[in-house]
Amino acid sequence: MNKTSYISRHVADLKPSGIRRFFDLAAQMEDVISLGVGEPDFVTPWNFIEQSFHALEQGYTSYTENAGMLELREEISNYLHNSFQLSYDPNDQVIVTVGASQAIDLALRTVVEPGDEVIVVEPGFVAYVPTVSLAGGTPVTIQTKPENEFKLKPEQIEEAITPRTKAIMLCNPNNPTGTFLSRQELEQLAEVIKKHDLLVLSDEIYAELTYDEAYTSFAAIPDMKERTILISGFSKAFAMTGWRLGYASGPSEIISAMVKIHQYTMMCAPTMAQHAALEAMKNGKPSVQEMIESYKQRRNFIVSSLNEMGLECPNPGGAFYAFPSIKATGLSSAEFAEQLLQEEQVAVVPGEVFGESGEGYIRCSYATSLKQLDEAMDRMKRFVEKRI
Ligand code: PMP
Image (tube, rainbow, N blue to C red; front, top):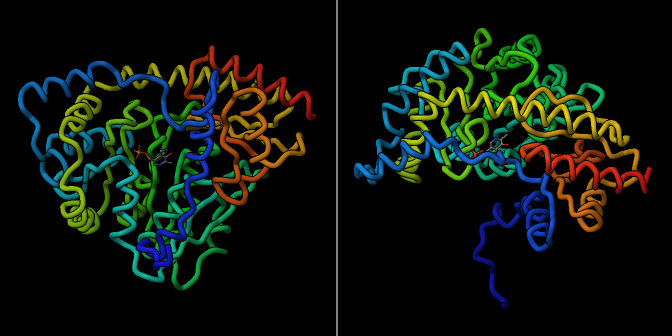
C-alpha cells in the first residue's frame, strides 16, 4: 500500500509491551506455569461479587456521577483515612476511574504541557514511559541500582532535574522489583521534591501488599499532600483486575480538572464494578488480610528457592514480585526467559522490559498457588543447574 499511514506519529513510535509478547508465546504452549502475569490468582471475594449482583438485580444499570458514586467516594475517603491517616474530601478530592491505569493517564494528561519533563523511575511499571509520551511530555528515566536494592535515592532525583521538570512518578511498593520504601526514605525524597517544587504522581496500588513494615503513603509525608496525586485501585489487594476499577485523590483543583477530561472521554467507571468496590471498601479487610498472609508465605518460599538455586534475590518488601539476578547464568534476561519457556515451560518476564537497569534480572510473580510455585521452582532449578 503506497499511502501515508493513518496512524499518528506518537502512536506509531510506541513500542508494544514486552510483557504481552511473553503472554502470547506462553498461551500457545501446553503445561505452562506462568509467573509472568501481574495479577492475583484469587477470585474476587464472594461478598464483593454478590453486591454487584444485587445492584444489577435492583436495576442499577445506568451511568453514575462522572467522578463515581458519591457513596463510593465517601468510602474511599474513609478507607484512606483509616488505613493511611489521609483526609480527602469525597466531593472534589476523589475520582473513581477505570483502573489505576486510567488514573495515571488522566493525571498525566491533566498536568503535562508539551515539552514538560516527567521523571520515571526504572526498573518500573511498563505503562509510565508511554503514557507520559502520549500526554505530550518527555519521560526522563532514572535507573535505580541493585546495590541500593533498587531504592530511589534523593541525589538521583537531583541529577535528573532540569528547568523543564514538572513531575515525578513514584511507585511504592515497586513493580517489578518489589522494593519497599520506608517513611524515612520517603521523607528524604520529599525534601528534594519540595526544594524543586515538583508534582508527584504516587502509584500506591500495592500499598496493602507489604509484608514486613507498616506502609506510609507519600501524601502523608509533611508538605507532600498538596503536591501529590495519589493513585490506587482495586485490582491487586482486592483481587479485582477484571472489574477495571481504580481511583485518584489529590488537591481539588487537580481532581476537578481530571473529572473534566473523564466526563468527555469515559463518562464514568462501570456502575456494577463500583457497587462491588463499595463492598470491598466497607467489608473487604478480612479477605484482603487472608490474601496478604498467603502472599507472604509464597514470597518467603520463592525467595529462598531462588537463592538456593544460585539466583541472588533480596527479600522484596511488597507487591507480589521477586526480581532475582540471573547474571550467574551468563544469559541476557530475554535469553533466560525465552529458553526457560521453551525448555521448562515456565513463563517469567525479562527484566529488560522494565528499563535499562532491569537487564540481568527477571520478574517472577508469586501471585500463584504454592503448589504451582513449587513445581515452577523445581523446573527453574533444573534449567539453572545446566548453566551455572
Ligand atoms: N500500577 C502498577 C504499578 C501496576 O503494576 C498496575 C497493574 N499491573 C497498574 C498500575 C494498573 O492497574 P489497574 O488494573 O488498576 O489498571
